[in-house]
Amino acid sequence: MYGNFTLKQEPVILGLESSCDETAAAIVRGRSLICSEIISSAAEQAKYGGVVPEIASRAHTDAVDEVTKRALAAAHMSVQDIDAVAVTYGAGLLGALLVGLSFGKALAYSLNVPLIAVNHIRGHMAASYLTDPEIQPPYITLLASGGHTAILHTKTELASVVLGGTCDDAAGEAFDKVARTLGLEYPGGVNIERLAKSGQPSIKFPSPLIRRDNGFAFSYSGLKTSVINYMHNAEQRGEKVNLADVACSFQHAAVDPLAERAVQCAKSLGVSTIVAGGGVVANGYLRSRLTSLCKENSLRLVLPEKKFCTDNAAMIAEEGCTQYRHGNFSSMDVNAKAQIPL
Ligand code: KG4
Ligand code: ZN
Image 1 (cartoon, helix red, strand yellow):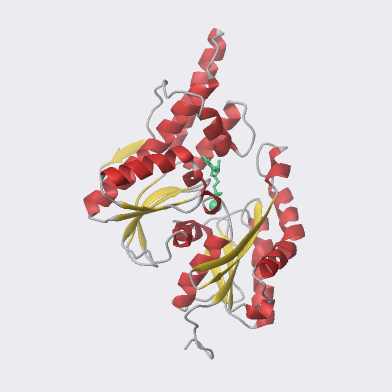
Image 2: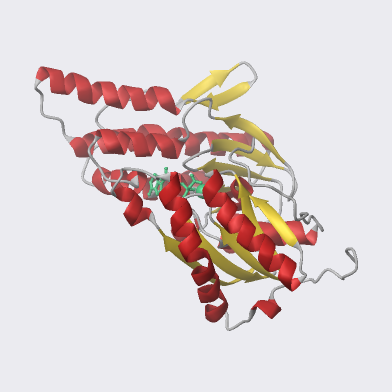
């Protein structure tokens, strides 16, 4: 029992996501995904070389009702079938978050069902349940998105310890900034990956991995600056740069330490499973490095499909399912937060 109603074993949860440039709605029943819909303003944002917060907020306002209707139609459901509404409340762009959160609150209130305010980062970490609903902690979580980079020891469904995080830029942020330096369009990560396919990792860029007395951390700012300096120096000397080699070398430098360190953490803590999430985990090279390293070390790897690595509402609904099962519901006065510490 929770309050005046009984928790369901397999609740139908509507997930809503609007933290950046994707307006998304998804429906799960328990851990089973029923549908996932996205309306993206990325093409509009690309004209400006990155996300313009006001454009994102306006796009969410236009799309949130429509994307929810699409999800309900795809699930052959009506709003009355929903047992709880899970919605991202942070971290992200404040105006963008407020659109989804206000919509989610209004819907939960009108349906008289629980509201579950979801931390976007925990959503990324829950995306692996879409691949394997049976994953059980403890496991190592590799999180690499546009705003966060960390390796965590997930001890229980609700508790993770950060083993090492970034002290400046996130991995995805470095991909985006390097992409801009190479003259590639937003969103940068996927365009670096595309260009890197025809290049060789022939340039030695510094590793973002930093050793610390009590462990390790990442610094992607130094790697990014090193690529910018490389381009700048070549330009000053009038040398022609092989952009595909720069993209490939950067990709290796950015991604190898993530995969290697995640595997080392699993081995040193005696944990047999690694899960991963966040936009950078859509990177094919990172996925293949993780896959081969886990195989060599007899570790189980659970990767979300690429479409569930970048922002989506299915991962928010999955995290909503975890919180629902623990009876962790939010009050109507929950506010949006631009930042939430890991
Ligand atoms: O998780 P996400 O969609 O949004 C945040 O929560 O930040 O991550 C977006 C980030 C961007 O920086 C983007 O460049 C990066 O993920 N990204 C990639 C790839 N696809 C998206 N980075 C490298 N390779 C990719 N294929
Ligand atoms: Zn995200």
